[in-house]
Image 1: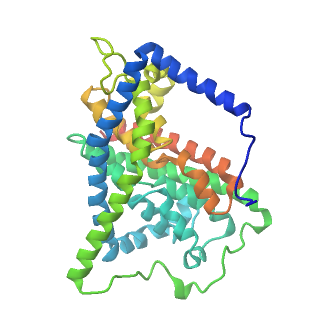
Image 2: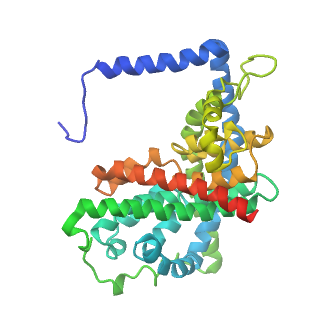
Image 3: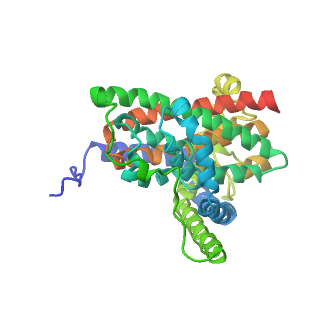
Length: 383
């Protein structure tokens, strides 16, 4: 039997534990809303999210994907790499080449850093203990451009809040990566400072060379725009399950009963998360400065899917539940965490260090929390 396939007894203890949890969750919601209204609201909310949020995010991803690939094709990304590479070692404790992976994930999503980690032309610059930290570095910037552009378009003046969120996310990433490096040094011990791969660095310098497409400038521009747009479509399609499944449940746990009672319309719910947020307000208010208890839904959703978390924002704004400070905090935590609970284990497995997954998750949890706190206080100081 293939060693990669895990098997378990067909019916085990976890079967009954899972059923008990499922019945408890849906029994609680169904008891409050009524079973018929619960399912009607679930379908209506998912349908509205698909039409009014997912396609909007996909459209943004297509445009930003085209722009980002255009910047890469004509050397602007290489210029950014040059500017920021000298900061990587003193701030993050990573080689200058790692900024290439950070930029790649900022323009796309967390797993974009994995191909770099598999490329010997890239890993030749790394010590053994630095490679696992690529997971935390890449995740800190995942979907950064899409999150930033989305937040900027949500209201007048929100561009300042989004930029503050970016700065805070960068600071949070430094903490995340540094904490992870402390763990990887312990893990590798005496082998920590060994080179990860052998190679000729002078002939494989990522910071001094870039690949370009064939053809004249017009052909390159056209090919780049179309290819970048296609990447945006793929990204938009990839976020659909996370948005519809995770965000639908989160919204039903966030919003409450309408004044006229439950009707089965979209965005009705049982208001469990605001209740918990209100109870924890003595902690959340000084740390993040949330305008309302409902705002706690965004970071919770970001843990699993930042695309789903983004879909909460328009409804929050429409109901007057968030302000500029919340946008800054959302940008920082959404970008820094960017659904890391759903990608970290797979990424660490791809890096060949699955045993360090728990260390990576703990380090990144701390980094994301710090990013949100820093964004709140930066917003107070600047705005």
